[in-house]
Image (cartoon, rainbow over all chains, first blue to last red; front, side):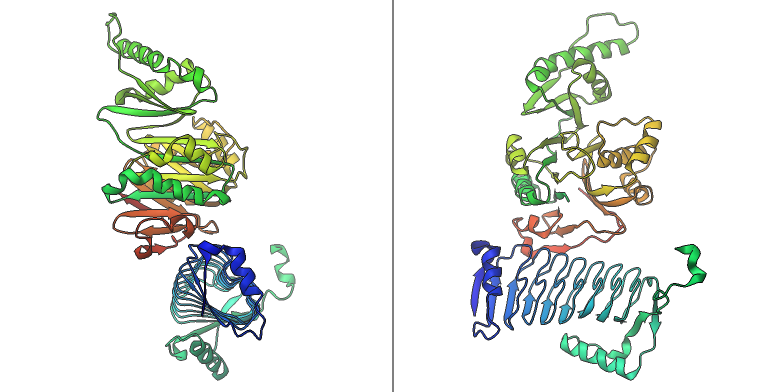
Length: 227
Length: 314
């Protein structure tokens, strides 16, 4: 276990150190202390190391992650794990807006609530939120799964493509082209796998599934007046 | 961008540290708003007296003899108000306390309106920043730390305060373009975001008799709240209707004599974090503005919901 005091060493030292780790490194366990709400903590990692950030962070924590497992013991600001490629990011507290934005892969777990635009434009990432998500979550979501154990805010899944959304609680409103879809055995199996990966004790049968009605995929001449 | 900080003390033993704590929060938000900064401080009030904070680009000449000139003018006005009294006007007791480019004038509470009317005649170059029993507003162009030092913010005491660091988007980098804005007696507003219908709303409010000193969008937001409250709305009601009437992105933080409120627009893309303990309620555009507050590790920290009015009073 190696410890980096962010307040003492500075952000560039932290990120340079973590980014320079070779995928085969044996320096696998890192503790980051005194984050004090700093931006861009532990971004751009590309080795399968385990990083624990002790405290709360600001914008873009764990962005562009590949292979690393990053755990934040507090809450995170906007854009946590944005554009994640692979690996795992776990937030013990709450996440601000745009959590997991544009993520291509990997798993983002938020044990508290996520604010608006969670999973905006997600491209393959899996996101599991133990609590609630705010408005416009999964906006233009292209691929991956967004699992919400609590409630969803307004306009869930607006203009969604092929991402799948599972919600256990209430949904305040659905966005354009987002509809309830039947839960078949393969969906239940997928959901059970995500719940287990995220350490969330919930029954897959308590969730509803949402996805694209695919009405916005093509130009529809009957809607010409609306364009 | 812009940064907002606010601190509303529940524990009176912290009041002597208000300025120090607020300065730390404000300086942390420098990179969100490095061009100007300002604060509203709710400090001590004196029975029967009101404070007017004024600002001038030529404080040496504008503030020289201002207390005496305003005192004389207010005494004349008061004498004229007493029918048939042609005797010599007696002094009303105006005092001035200068603080860099700003000065706080103490006047009798009943003569605030007269003082506001008379000041532009006496000193055309000064701007009135605020009036009220407790509020003082200080704002200038410059780095937040520099602005705080100019006004001695770390040494100020009070029950609550609001600060703003500005990165101009909608109007020029000037003192008048900086925040907070006064929205009425003992009231102020700071804003992060941009209002997109401010020109049209300014024209409408001008027709209603409101006056404006800048092309700034936040000034329009402040004038809107003043206008609504002049027509009988409470601050909470004015904030509720602002969700309908103001278009654009905004996080507002407002101060009143004994209250402190927060409102985000329905889209809520401008950041906001609230923290509450038994000792205080604190607002920061980002969590890092709050990290040095006492007991923050045990505070309830959350992000205010969109289009929901939060308000605390003493």
